Length: 168
Image (cartoon, rainbow, N blue to C red; front, top):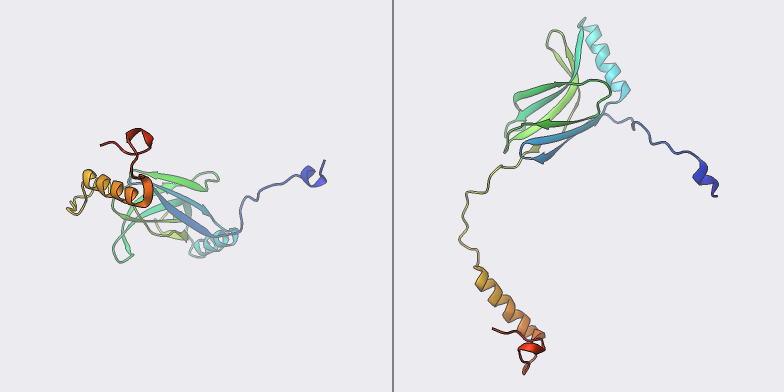
């Protein structure tokens, strides 16, 4: 047996990154995952301590974003427990822009961000109201493609219906 296969292989629990990523699952659901570097968390906790504040919770903050990329409103805060590193966010509004921030909330309500995600936009939840009159009918499309097929040699002249030709 190959000695390389005998060695145990362990995936790392993290890569030392400090980032959060936000993705759209459907018009009403977002998904986010993150990794917070220990140094970044330690630095923020030192800032909180220097201000004499008390840590309340680690939270994931969902923000609705306006057309200029600024926070339009804080949509929801989710309290993080244990060693969570990903989260599904349900019941968001379709056709909106979103961002999540992960950070520490203090007892006085002050929020200290650890990382900020990318901005995503949830799709609309209904069909388009636009009625485009330029669509060809099925009959016209079939006739056009049949003619192209015939001119490309798809039907040999002199063939009858049973020999590979087309019956109409």
